[in-house]
Length: 381
Ligand SMILES: [Zn+2]
Image 1: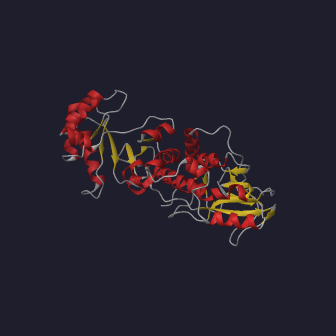
Image 2: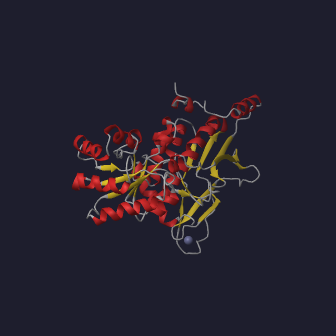
Image 3: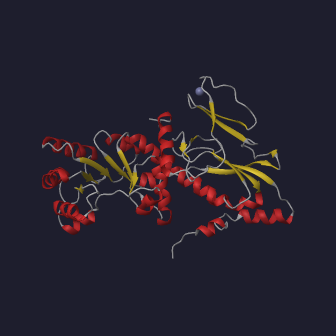
């Protein structure tokens, strides 16, 4: 059996840190049944990140759906910053406290993946970006990882169930296994061409046996215009400089009049190597860097008890509003009932926290929303 929690076990609150159960026992023994507001907030960001992309909201709402609670939240796909509440829950603490561990897990991991996908999107510029990382995570969460990678800015995903979740066809080329089992790159590519549905692009994996340059030329010659692209899956650690190899392949293909053949790169890529290769490469497959991105460390904190502002030290109490300037994208966190002064740039504020969406947005629309914000949120360096 798999070492995973079922949806039922998660909703029942069995994925919880034990201190909640003890807390509930004490509160019940003393007859304390308080209404609270809690907020989910990141008090710092991983690495040198200055912003994140909020993901995991749809799943979080599905956990809360059956409970008697009120929710305010940022829309999934909102770019948020540290110290901004992204989700607020109001209700009896005893009704939803048992979901703290699970809710945090949903938001922290999905937001980390979506944020890294967005950073890779920026590094890849206008080049195509695919998520190839399902194999790097537990299969039970791989669909969630693929969805988060997509809404963060990937153009497509390789894993079939993940693709179904985002309403797309999965994308992929051919594995080294096919080339090895057919015994030759050209033979494998021609067999692929003869057998596979014509709607699938013909992309030859050229780094299995021989030098990438000569394999690219051989396969381009054999396949003629039926060849859409060649894929290089050689991580830079394998030998030499990956960029130089790609440059060489591009040069030789151009020289024989095959500027139409696209170059697809995969294998150990990250936001730094994407930036380096983007001028040369037409499409990227990114795995571990996105699928195993660092989580965003959200925490869930009480900010109001029985209508009175109350929070632990280091935490601002009371219910809040978050505003973003529609001009300069400056953010402002204020008490909910406070109308903020105009932004110095003169543009109007837009509130970021609101009621749950109805209907649930399509992943494509969430991704569009992310892409529209990214130009205003550059990565450092
Ligand atoms: Zn402004």
